[in-house]
Length: 104
Image (cartoon, rainbow, N blue to C red):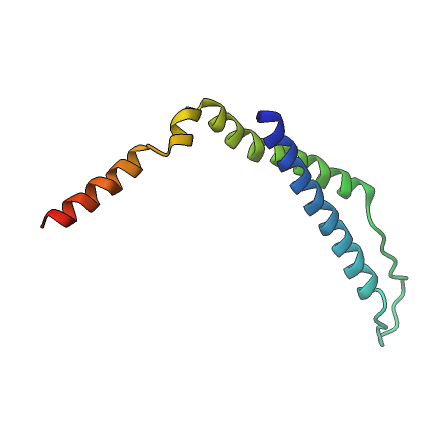
């Protein structure tokens, strides 16, 4: 169960990273198409930096582990039979409130 939750979170973060990197590349290409009417003493050249992409990948993997482990560990500690039956305290409180409102 923990492995499945971590894989799902990892795929979600990986797909978000690919979309973000693709978007930044597209914006970079779009921004470089504009012509500046002012003469510049230097050339404006930009490219995707491998160091920044690597840092973003490491941060994304760290966030994946943090955000994926928390629900995985909570589900591991939860009582599965109680969750499947649906007899939690909040469910019992709602039933008691309904019964109390009908008795008035």
